[in-house]
Image (cartoon, rainbow, N blue to C red; front, side, top):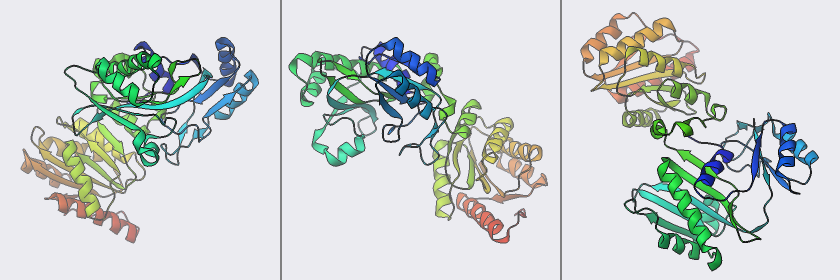
Length: 399
């Protein structure tokens, strides 16, 4: 789960990371009032969207008067901000963050991520801040500092000092950097984050280390332990399909293809998508209905997949262990009787109660295409879609 910049800053500030004074606004008039409350002579108006690259897209503006703040905010509200991370559809701007300007002496990149190879938290930092880490890696690879944190002891002071020295932090400011690094690490581990990124972390003209931007991502599966983090979720920044899936307890990721997938198990879902591509199609989604695939749950999954207008065929692939094929078959039949679809539906069942499940499918009277193997199911789904496309028809036969 992603959160906004202002939310990440509030969290990190609670762990000892210094951030500039700022305030949230939901209208141009409120933005100007926030600047008056903050005081000062210069302010930054930032569009709050779940994406990086806002500055290049016009989502971050320096203002020197309340009138400029009003105009800058007015230009952002209700618009779609398109960056290299949003895709061409962009993300809507419904709130802005007004922040006092900070005198910048130098910029640093700082990130905390999970390193799969070492199975540890990795700190990635660079003395060349202000750019995306991919750009830094390509243009200034020697500036990147990496450190692995041993979870048994956590981030130690000596390790934080080493990072500070490698980044060229002056001796008088090393302790500030240590506090910042340890604060970020504590926030990362205690709140089950999967990423903490500060870009840029700046050294100011008055010798302070301040986070000018902040991004945090959290493990969705751990949010039951952190209700205060779950409350920060902004559905307006999410794919509507993924929001609906999350509300229904389904694991769903929307893609750009046209073969809808309903699968149990993340590994099988990935294999199903690979097989669809091998058969010449493109998956429209990742959807794992989980281990308890009751008829009601399968029906919810069907309704979710069919709500995507790009879907032109559906492949149901179930390997029943904890699940039962007859439950899944009942769910498929219930969903299609309640909400008939005009796209081909291919069903492949295997495992517990497979004979009963196949009997339910066969006796349903619905135009369902059955398959025995995954490859056969993928080929039939892609073939049915192509046939509909070529013949401009929606007619299908039960195999």
